[in-house]
Amino acid sequence: MKEKFKVLKNKNILVTGGAGFIGSNLCEILLEIGAKVTCLDNFATGHKHNIEAFLENANFTLIEGDIRDLDTCHKACENQDFVLHQAALGSVPRSINDPINTNSVNTDGFLNMLVAARDAKVDRFVYAASSSTYGDSENLPKVEDIIGKPLSPYAITKYVNELYADVFAKTYDMNCIGLRYFNVFGKRQDPNGAYAAVIPLFVKQFMDHESPTINGDGTYSRDFTYIDNVLQMNLLAITTENKEALNQVYNTAVGDRTTLVQLVNLLKKHLTKFDSEIDKVEIVHGPNRKGDIPHSLASVEKAKKLMGYAPTHVIEDGIEEAVQWYWDNLK
Image (cartoon, rainbow, N blue to C red; front, side):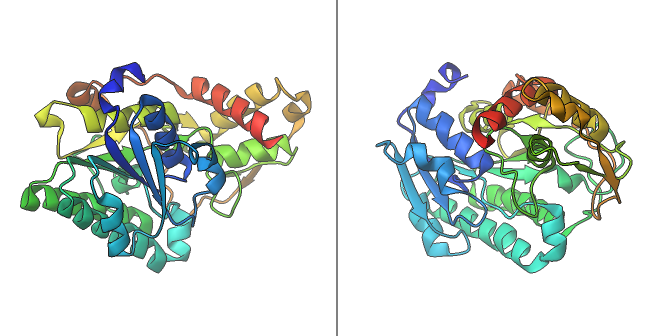
């Protein structure tokens, strides 16, 4: 993949939320390509240990700051060719518990970044959108131009991001691309904290011989998307020469769905290679979670057609790699 994107060598690229799960993986691959990477993070949800290996790299610059501060955003965008905007307060439950902070970071912060990128005349502004935007739409697979009503404050903020990006593209002649992430997982995804994503949380619990709790009966399904597919989409978004591909929103997924029961079985299968006792760990079922949609499955045809997207990892490939990383780093 790195060879395909060598055009990015020596380009100045800002990654907001660069110390987070997706952001740090983006920083890593961009540095490997030879880009000059600036990371902007306030470490509210990101971690310094995610970027520790980059700090001695001459092509890496860390700006510790908050996207809710416009001056910081202007400073970070200076002389940048591209912006990969990953900074946000994620999690549907967090947004239900704290809608004000979620809105402040995800809406006000996003607008600050758009303004700063516009003023700095960056070539392209690529941002993390979300599958939560599909809301109560029951259509499967999810296609980009058919959405429902949002089911959480988080979903509202991510939809507002898309509306702002569209307006800025039309009003200020910016080039913006939104990537609707579907349940991304992989190395460096934090298993700790009240709002940990399901895969790292379950992996850690299995490794500790604790029973994971499935919300509902386990038939809810998701388009679990391995980090390498997400990296590819971000790199395609800043390098595509197809003018028709600009100022669009794309599903960033695999195009396949897995139930929570199937997910648990996959995790057990790959974790028992390291510890046979994990196979004996029982699963607990709890109530369905507020704001959750029953099923999520993306069509990735638009990304394939307009940007040449070709997913490299189906869920089991990703689970195998992620489990290996967690075993090496959590044990």
